[in-house]
Image (cartoon, rainbow, N blue to C red; front, side):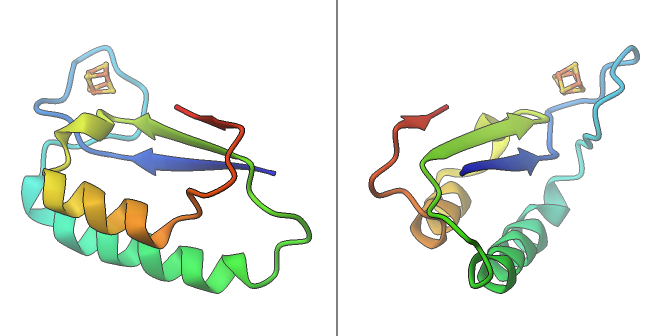
Length: 84
Ligand code: SF4
């Protein structure tokens, strides 16, 4: 099963961009907490294990290292065939 995690933050919002993204860094911590909570709710009902983990956005690398660490610790990162 593939898991896509949308990180909706960028350093600025490009005028041509149709992706959901925002430069509001003050929302990052709440977002990570909500994403971890959502994963906790949804992961119990999965019929098969996650073998592929994708991060997209936005600009996933715009998350501070500590928040990225918290997110990675909560998500399934073992036995992956691919992580991007
Ligand atoms: S996702 Fe890419 S194109 Fe869109 S605002 Fe962020 S940096 Fe710009």
